[in-house]
Image (tube, rainbow, N blue to C red; front, side):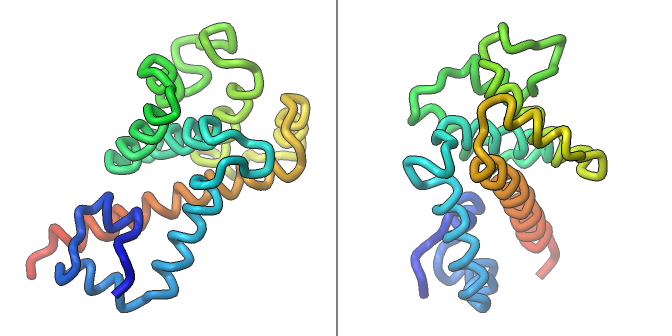
Length: 173
C-alpha cells in the first residue's frame, strides 16, 4: 500500500479502513491526484503564483463549495505561511463581500485571483476572454492564468472526492 495522501488525511482514513482499501483499488487515481496537489500547492513557486496566493484561492473555492475539510486544510496551510485569520476570513468571504475592495487588505492582483475563483466556481458559463484580460491587467502571466484555472478546477475535483467518500462513509454497510 502507498502512504496516506492528502485525501486520506482529510478523511482520517487508515490502512485497513473500508474507504482506504477502496481508494487503494485505484492506485493511479490516488497517485495522480496527489501529484496534482503537489504540483499545484506543494511547490515554492508555480507559474508566478506564490504559495499564499494559491492557498487563498483554494480556501475561497473550498468555502464556496462548503467543504469543511478542505477549508480547514487551506487555513492550516495559510497559517503556516504566516497569513493571519483576518486575511483568511476575507479570502473565504470573497473579494466582493460586504462591498470589500482591494483597499480592504488585498492588492488588485489578489482581488483578481479571488474574482476569477468566484467566476469559475459559481458561473463558469459566463467566463469570457475579457476575464482573462483582467487577470493579465492584474499582472498575471499566461502561465499563471493557466495554473490559476487548473488550481480552481483541481480544488473542485477534491471537493467531489471528499463529498463522495463522505457519502460512502455514511452509507449503511
